[in-house]
Structure formats: C-alpha cells, structure tokens
Length: 595
Image (cartoon, rainbow, N blue to C red; front, side, top):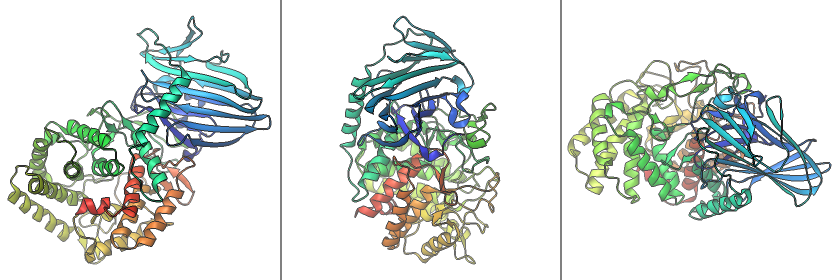
C-alpha cells in the first residue's frame, strides 16, 4: 500500500520528475522525459514494480523540507542511535538525466539500508544487471540503461540491489543514478557534491527574478518553483502533472494521464508566470503553444505532448493494481480527440495577454489565430465535451460558448490595440451573436443563474470565471446570482466541486474530491465582488491544505482529509499564484484578464 498522496515530495530537472515519500522511497520516476515509461512505479502498484528506498534500518522520526528556495529535498531521520539527512535532487543543467541521493551523518552512528528495484516499462521489465570495471552497476533492458555508482557496498538479492552501511557524524555517502541509451558507451557520472552546489546556484539564480505577493510571497515562490519543475525545458511545454492515474476517487475509475500540456491552461499559466516576473518562461510557453497548434485549424487539439506530439493514444496497463486499488491505470489520454470549444478562446486570450505585456512578437501567431477564428465561426454552435472533458454525450456547455465569445473579443482587441489586420466589424457581429445566444440559452430564469449546459438545471464551477474572462462585469446581477447559487450548491465543507457528478452525464460513476483550482476561483470571485475578508479566509484555508513541503494535488477530499488526483498539479499551483496576486496587488490578474 503506497503512502497518502500528500506524503510525497517532488524532485526534478525540468525534463522529468520523481516522487519521494517521507519514508525515503522514490516510488515514481519516468526517464528520460515526463512522458517516458516509468522505471520506479510502486506508486501505482507495489515495490516489485520498482522503487528506491534509502532509510535507517530502525524506526525513525521524519521531518523534511526543501533547501531554501530550491528543488533540493532534505529529509531528516532521527533514530535512537542518531540522526542523518538524506538529500535528493536532479541537476537541471547537467549532461543527461541524473538522480543524486546523498546521505549525511549528523549525530551518532546510524545503520542505513538502500534497496533499489529497477523495473522498466511501467514496472514490468526486470533489467540485466552487471558491474563495470570501475564498480559502477549497469542495468539494461531493451533501449534503456541505468548506471548506479556509490562507495557503499552493493549486492544482489532477489532481483534487487541492496546495501547496508553505517553513517557517522560528518560522513557523506553519495549515490548517483544516470540514464542513458543502452546502445551507447556508458557515459561519465557527475561529481555528486559539485552537482549539488550547481543545482543550488541554478535555483537561487532563477528565484531571484521572482516578484512578491505580500504576506503570501513564500507560498507563491514555492508554487512557481513547482511550475518551473513541471516545464520541459527543451520545448517550453508545461505538463499538467508528472503522474498518471492517481485517482480522483479512491477505488474509482477517474484515473487519467496528466503528463501532457493542455491548451486550456494557457492564459492562466501566462498570467502566473508574468505576474511572478518570469517572462522568459512565459515566452517559451507562448512559443510552445504556437508551434503545437500550428497546422489545419480543423485539427486543433485540447492537449499535446511535451514537444507538441499529437498522438496521445490511451491504453490501460493491466499488470498494475493502481493506487490503493484504483484501476485502471491509464497511459495516454483519449480526451485529446474531443471537441472542446473553450480552447479556442484560451488560445486567443493567451496570445492577446502576451501582446499586452510586451512579450516579443511571434511571427506566425496572428496568421494561425486568423485561421482558428475562421474555423471557430463555423463550429461554435455545435455541442462539445466541455472544460471537464466529459466522456458522456456532447452538449452545449455554457462555459464553452462563453470562451468562443472570448476568442472573437480578443481578436477585436488585438486589432484595435495592436493594429493586427482583420475584419473587425464582422468579428463584432459574431461576438454579439454568441453573447446573445449564451444569455438566452445559458441562463436559467427559474434558478436565476447561468447553468452548466443549455437546457440543464445543473451548475458548474467554471461559471465562477464569467467576470474574470470579461463576458459580463462582476456587478451584473446575473453574475452575482450565479456566484451565490454556485456557493450554495457546489461547496463541500467550504471547498468547491467542479459539478455534481451524480447529476451530470459525464460517462463515469459519480464521486470525486473538491477540485482545488475551483476553490481558488471562488476566492477570485469574492475579490471581484468586494468580499475581501471572506476571500482572504478561504485563501488561507486553501494554503493550509498544502503538504509539509508546499505541494498541492488536483483535488482534496474534505471528508477523508486527504489529497486526490495527480500530484503535484500545475493548475492548482497556477491558480494559487494568480489568486495571491489578486489579493495582494492593485493590478489584479482577474481584472486584467477581463477588462
């Protein structure tokens, strides 16, 4: 049984990432990219599916932290015989993908153990392990090769590499694991302590660009570091999460692969990065978006691979039992083939916001936008799968139509404010037609609020964004009424559900946690309508849900008091950053976006 999701911490090198438990076990790691097959997969199965434990042999009290504003994880084990610190990190500027674990003796003599099970191909393939002339262990299976080097004595035991060693005060025991292609000559391994210094300097330099957020600055910095860690540096793409199939309900079917890049996250990601002072990352994300969607507008997808790949075929992994028995475990995501109209608005909005803050021009962007608008004009009246990628029947989702309105609104603004050429008067007519359609069909007079889909009585947390996207002002009585109805009907213990799964035809059994981004949206809504004290109280409560190293999953179960869904979730941390800026700044992202 794996630990609770919140017991994990993140390490990464801006190309892939691993999860380290409080017990010193790395239970999830994909090499060499976020979307590669995992070599440690105990998170979704058991230890025989691959993990790497370093911990004292005897029981220990555990505390951990990141070293300052870095992604260097320090786990302190205190035992009856002494204490040690385990340092885990992945150098972000090294040559190749490297994982380094350092054991530092602090007090007394502590007996330690290391157990490493390498299982390639999502925990299914046992490698062939040999020892090189310099003592380095080499594990090979097919195209994959891992090299392990340490001064600690290693031995094989039941297809596991085992080590027992004693650490005394001032002693340092390094373990270096490096990935390479099996057909190549084994590469050199880096000096672990020089790599530690270089990694600390990398993060210190990167964080130095960060702008503050008042009393919430520390939380914002940690969320931005997390967002940076989820960025695939070679392309600028940002994955939604580094994991797959962590369940939205324990034992349920809502288990999805999030190791891809969603167009839907575009605008809020840009606002978070630019609000934090990271314009290079914002520009790289903007450029990734333009490259990914380039091509026929009829083939626009809602998500892409980290380099812009389009085929994200979904399949189930039969040999994995899933996190706490939550099956199936899925690789790939079939939602990439859905029609979701809101992504057109997200794309147009993101590129407009990039122009507003003066990001350098992207040459092909406007031509692509014009093509997307031409296609959107022909399809905006069609039903779609909605922002939540429902696997039930297509419907006329209200938020999808609102975002179609956003697409034409931002095109008009780009033309008027930046001189971009286009048929502005025609776009204005289309924009007005969509607005009238939504207000006529998406607003339920009996409920006195906007609803999830035309003709439905169901509510949807995405409607909290009506004012933020600029569809209607926050002081419009329909907007305020919608906020109040959502607040009365979608809150569970003060946290916001996306929608009521028991009442929606989403193609899956009901039941999930509260979606954390939606709770941050409620804070933003409170800000827009002047309920500032309530906004700050809810925001502080959301911050208290983070784990001991400041990380958030996709969802939270307020009844079981535990995290759910893929972890850590970029959208949760993006929303945290933007909400902190809404609370702490005169120039608020929600007002800036909707103005």
